[in-house]
Image 1 (cartoon, one colour):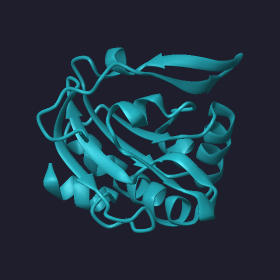
Image 2 (tube, rainbow, N blue to C red; image 1 turned 180 degrees about the vertical axis):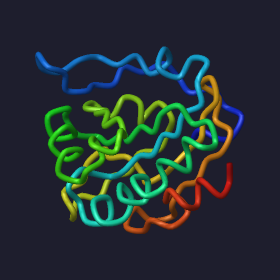
Image 3 (tube, one colour; image 1 turned 90 degrees about the horizontal axis):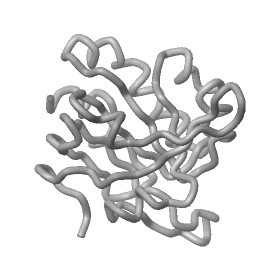
Image 4 (cartoon, rainbow, N blue to C red; image 1 turned 135 degrees about the vertical axis):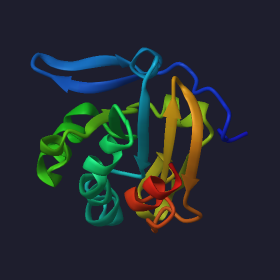
Length: 162
């Protein structure tokens, strides 16, 4: 069953690219005692993810901070090298958005937010969603019906719901 409002996110180890290569990120520790926005995309460098989803959170980052959000995290089922390069190319890293890799789709699978679209070459990827999380508990969750759209899960929509 998919994650829903009121649920506590499961423990997960994600990856980020550090100075010496991939580094493990304990998601539970990162969320502890904090207000965090997490948004997930089907794939780095893919169309809507690059042209709409990431830019929506870059545009709204200051407004989220004004509401007390400690961090905005982008998760994708990609490797940390791709996530780091994509963060640089989109301006997300410069904007202060954390780009985390769910390389094995373990977190995505644990919250039942995955999908597969073989014709597009997307296997065991994340559905498009955005959530507001307080101390590891989901307070607001917006998911898209189709991975090719970014309306409910965009930065402006999530910001309006908080």
